[in-house]
Amino acid sequence: MTSRRIYGVACLVLPLFSLIFMATIFGNGRLENLPVGVVDHDNTSASRNIIRKVAATPALSVSHHYANESEARKDVQRKVIYGYLVIPSGFASKVGNNQAVTLCYYYHNALLGVGGELRSTFERLLKQLSVQPIALEAIGWGEDKRAVTSFLMPVTEEVFPVYNSERNYSVYLSQPFYFVFLQILLLLVTTFALGSETKWCTTKEWLQTAQGNIVVAVVGKLLPYTLIFIGMGLLGNQFFLRWMQPDLSVSLWAMNGLMVLFILATQALALFLYSVFPVLALVISAVSMVGSLGATLSGVTFPVVFMDTPVYVVSFLFPIRHFVEAEQTLLYLHGSFADCWMSVVSLLLFLLPPLLLLPRLKSVLIRNNDETGR
Image (cartoon, rainbow, N blue to C red; front, side, top):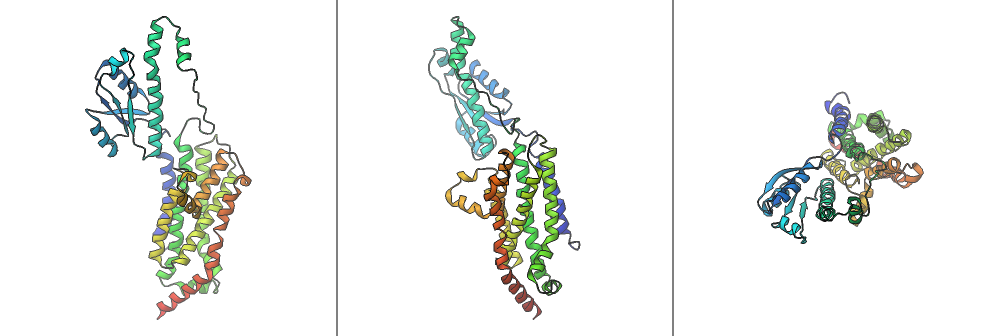
């Protein structure tokens, strides 16, 4: 481990970098000043008043004005802006004559977080604008303002987030994303540590040191990395769950126990893949693909239960999916291991396949050593 710089970088430098990166990437934790455009076909004081109200919304920033919708649509597709509002011609006159008029908004929903924020912001803003002309007219007739408001909007919406009062994206994204990145590093380091014995023709010495016992050889080889990554996991949990989010009432013992299971399951997956593809270049490609897919299928950015059935089934083959599911149960449902026992059992089951393939791995290592000797 000390003879090659790559181990220090992969085991210490990159995890610490990802810790700092995930702690700072979301800024204040909320989506603000999202660039949007406006297509104003009316160009009146009423339409400009609407544009000012859109610009005054903290989540939005009116950065572009367009002459037509086709130009705005092209910029949405290029992600220059994330959405745009269309004010039709004759808007002010129709509102003044009590005629129905439609304000249309369009948004880019490929980025689900941004799309959801734009939709809710536009709907909330336009809902208020839609009742304003009626309210002003009724008040002008002498009606009481409170009576008009209660008639037009009889239900007042009050939102009380249970676990994330500030609606901070960092609360529920930083910590799991850190472990998503950690599992990619762990897969790569584990397979490289095993494959380097064959690459540098030291398989014979490795097995001789373990007195021919493949279990001792594998455990002795991987145990230092296990302890290092467990240490990085402990640091991550302490950092995200105590220092960044001190109001979270979750047992660190439970979270750390779950993290240790996740580290062991991820290493077991890497050992399984190396036993199936005992060629360093091939297995590095395999674990890179598995790590990338694990980031997608973890359920952090999109709920796994709403994925297509084939994708949902495949997600069970990734330890990170079970780890995130159990972690969310502990964090947001105030549960215990009894409430996420299926995820815990799933993580434990990852330890069985590589154990069954250890005899095959030993025979492959011996064969490769004999071929190298010749």
